[in-house]
Amino acid sequence: MRGLSPAYAKHTAIPGSILWDNEMIEQEHILTQGITESLGIQGWNHLDPILLAALATEAPLLLIGPHGTAKSLLVEKVATALSLSLRHYNASLINYDDLVGIPLPEEGADRLQFITTPGAIWEAEFVFFDEISRCRPDLQNKMFPIVHERRVAGIQLAQLQHRWAAMNPPAPEDPDVTSGDYYLGSEPLDAALVDRFPFVVPVPGWKQLSKADRRRLVTRAPQAVEYPERAAPSLPHLVERCARLLPSLEEELRDWLTDYIVSVIDLLEQARIPESPRRAYMLARSLVAVHAARMVLEGDDADLEYSAELTLTFGLPQNASEVPPSRATIIAIHRQAWEISSLAEDDSWRQVLEELDAVKRIVLADQLDLSDADVSRLITQALGTEPSDARRIGLATAIFMAFRDRRELTPSAWEPLVQFVTRVLEPRTMTANLRPGPITDVWNEISSWMPTLEEANSLLVRLERNYVLSGFPDLWMRFDWKEALEQFRADLTLFNVAGK
Image (cartoon, rainbow, N blue to C red):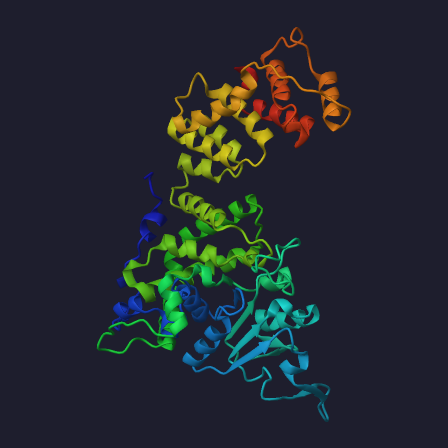
């Protein structure tokens, strides 16, 4: 591993003794049976740290999943375990009066008083908005201050601690109605509303449950476990201990946390998953809470890297969108941000990783004289993540021409380079029957532009000519050949092929 920054070296594994007091939690029982399993919810163990972090920070949490996945059941059991007064609202059916009661002018005062009902929100300690994605837009706007500020009609809800919600996955514009994975009545939440939920949590459906979890769910039989002689910590006790860890842990992680979150937000932006500045702050606070929760539940086995991965996986508002980001994308972003934040500020590899453009990253690595293996890794990444076949062929040609004589790249880099560049550099004969239509129009444009072999008296002109010809007809029926040519020229310039 490359040289570690002091922050990374210090916090890769934080000894539990730093933050624990004399009253130790019984880790054996917590590891044997987690929070959700102890509440009778099967297959949710991986979400225990997220739920505990949300409870300890009193942060709003949004559950996303198909019907019948125990979202409402979990909330009811958590509220009961915490001995909190719960208000469970079906957001698709309620009116504003159901939340606040009936407003009436107060005698002798220039204000309203509310005639409340048993279901009104005023005395609630835990509020759960079910089916929030089926809620009318005007009512969503009125829920906004409840979720964000714990206020209703401008009045502070002094007793309200937890604001959770649930929804079915929203349907994309062109859903596969035969899949059963989408709900046509479930609409995406307003972006500003979903951005007020620090935790946006997809929950497991039947497909994600293990065979053992499925059997326990069907039979409602709890897993047979042997408990230690002393009683396991209650949920309120776990929440209290997690909350108690937060100030010290936040101070311990501050420097590393800043590096990691800044890198994450930049990489998400590059991946077209833009986040608000508010979300950056939320992710930082959530990561501390998730790691504290894992320390409570797992003790010294809690590693910071997995806490960061969990936070990013269940902390993005796009999880509630029609097409959530793939887990592979999120994990790749996490790993790159983790690697950046693990390196010292003046480390050359860190400078390369902080360059957001994958192609410019190769050039920078070459300029900083990084090893052939490092440059090879960056080439493989750039070619693998480039979505356009036309750009990939041109880019491979530019890289090959730049490094063919002065870099001993690894086979994993040379193989795709040669595969793509052969199409441009190796002469070939092609015969095609042209009939009036788009393909003929494209060929006529190319013919009018194309320099003859005699005119192609420089390396750049020959490369351009070969590149355009290599893409006919298949590439130029899918891509604009003129735009692709301009990109090819830019890549040749970036890699200084003209000077080779």
